[in-house]
Image 1 (cartoon, rainbow, N blue to C red):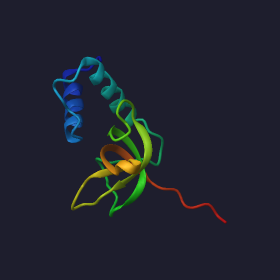
Image 2: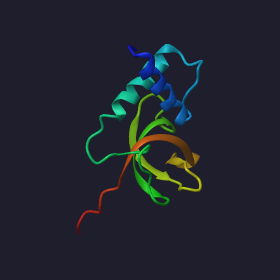
Image 3: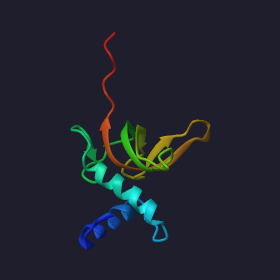
Length: 116
């Protein structure tokens, strides 16, 4: 991980904002999270940064999940729910286990239904 002190501070702040920072994490874990951080800024057009804008109400969207839930080792794209302004959490459906709180870096509305 070749980071300047300033970029390292930005990375640590990004992790803290998402509840993913642990100063006891190994170098390998930090390298994986750094890769997620870099990749999240290179998503294709149409993705909205969760830092810039959030859904206006509780509904399902596509989310780039960077931590928690099923994304324990690698980021993933999945349908997630943003709870809302009064309870600003992202949830991922975990089957019979219920919902898990996750960290989402980017999101986009679900596509329209196909024409019949």
